[in-house]
Amino acid sequence: MKKIIMAVFALCLISSVQATEVAVVDFRSALLQSNIGQDAAKEPKQKVAAMDARLKKEQEDLEASAKDLKRDELTLSEEEFKARRQQLADNQNKVRSLAANMQRQAKELEQQLIQSLTPKGEAALKSLIEERKLDLVLNRQLSLYANADADITDELVKRINKDN
Image (cartoon, rainbow, N blue to C red; front, side):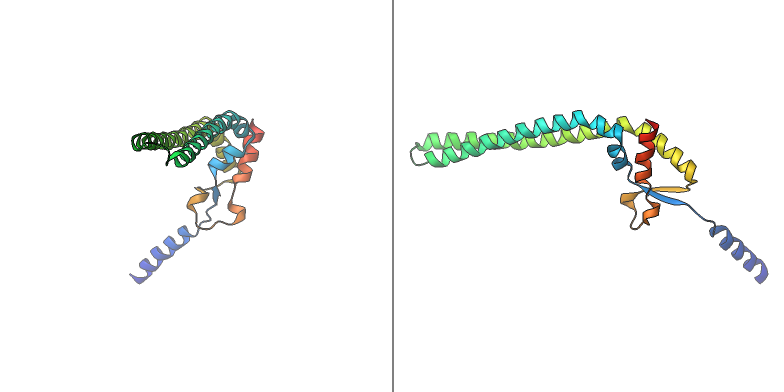
């Protein structure tokens, strides 16, 4: 009975010793660093820059209104001061809402960009996996430690560039 248990244990140990080829990749970063990613990101970057410029202008206008209100505080009637303070508060809420909306739009633009590039990135990753005979590929952000040789992000960028 001992020999059978030892044989089963040895068999389990031998089967678990098989070499496993593991790599890590930052897929999002590879897509955005590739030539097609850089080209595709130009328009969204311009849109985000335009939204950012608009937001900065709104914030500057808001600051100017706040300074004007503070300067005119002593010369305004109490009702007019309250009305302008309420208008300033409304404008602050609009700017906050505008900022949140712009952040949402920027995130959506990035997600659309990633989704449009994903099929080409996946094809390049599959060919890289087959070429290197990898058993497991993990997202780099999920790994606690990975040897530099295990990171295939740069190779993936080169493969995406080569395939396009």
